[in-house]
Image 1 (tube, rainbow, N blue to C red):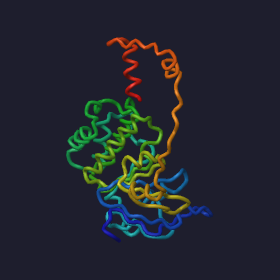
Image 2 (cartoon, one colour; image 1 turned 90 degrees about the vertical axis):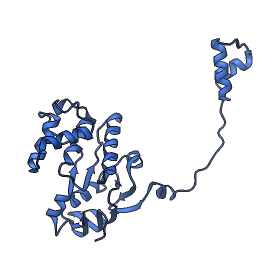
Image 3 (cartoon, helix red, strand yellow; image 1 turned 60 degrees about the vertical axis):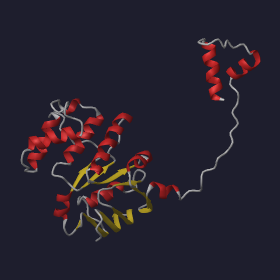
Image 4 (cartoon, rainbow, N blue to C red; image 1 turned 120 degrees about the vertical axis):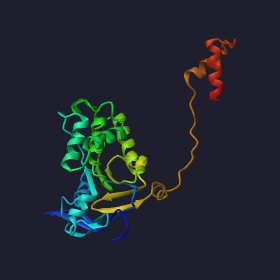
Length: 269
C-alpha cells in the first residue's frame, strides 16, 4: 500500500442482499483531517468499522498506518483509536479517574501524570475532580476524545462526534479535533453535517449509494459548480423611509435621538 496514513482500495461490503459498499477508494494523508460525508445509511460507519478491524470487508484492501486491516489486525489496533457516536465515559467516575482507568488498562506507566496532561490539553483541569455525569455534552465528548488518545495513537476515527450536541458543545469538539491535527494525529471524521466538514477538513469525500462520488479539498469541490452569479435585488423602502421622506421632520440637533437615527440612515445609504 502507499505511504498514506489510511489507504482504501475497492472496498466492498454487503449484508445479505443489501450492498452497502460497492467499491470504495480513498487515501488520507498523515497528520491531516479527512471528512467522510454521507446521509444516514450511506455506509460511513461501515467503513470505519472495517478500518478499525471490527468488521471484515467482502472484497478490496485497506491499510492503516501501513498495516493491512485483515492480515495485520493487531498492529492496526495498536495504531488507532476509535470514538463512536456517543461518549463512552463512566459517569460515576471523575474525569481524571476515567483517564487514569484507561491508562491503567493499557498498562502505561504514570497513569496519573498522563491523566493530568490530557486534562490540561483539553481544558478540563478545573473539572477533573468532578464526576463525569455532571459534565456538559461538550465536556463529556472532549473527555471521550482525550481518553481515546491514551497510548498516543497515530490515527483516530471520529464517527459522527457531534451528534446530538448543542452549537456551543459542537464548537468545543471542533477545537479539540483541530488540536489533534496540529499535534500530528491523523483524523478520519465521519459526519452528516456539511458545515462541520467545511470548518475542519483538509480533504472531503462524499459517500453516496456505496461509492465515493467526489474526493478533494473544499476549494476543489466548490469549483465543480458553476461560478456564482451576482444579481441586482431591488430594496423596497421601509415604513421608516416613507415617514421621514414625507414629513422631513427630523431633529438634527447634535446629540438628539433623531440626529443619531438620521446619521444611521445616512450611513446605510
